[in-house]
Length: 123
Image 1 (cartoon, helix red, strand yellow):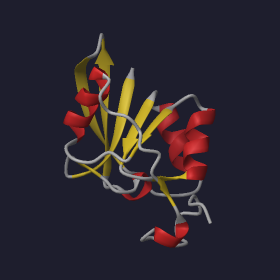
Image 2: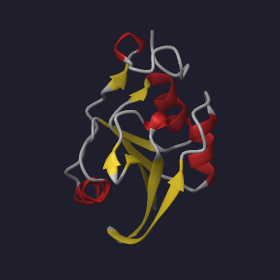
Image 3: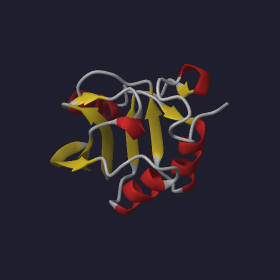
Image 4: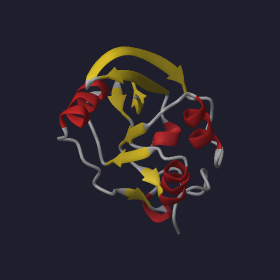
């Protein structure tokens, strides 16, 4: 299993598409066995769900994400956890213990600080 966390300096980013990088954790038997930093290749509509899917990601953790992006991840059978904050590794450990749940915090255009830039936020 691979879990990607949208991060800025090892801390969970507020919006998955505008993070500096993704920390990708490889997990086996509920233990982190490897992690790698993957630079954010850029935020274009529909691109990141495809990009992370090709990396073999099964779960993505972020502070927030647009509803369309969540739908695209779900279409690829990638679980989305939003509403997370704090250190990336601790969030992954909490997820593995079953104590990290999605708040359903969907980015909405009227409250999105990158208003109109991503094309993935709800109206």
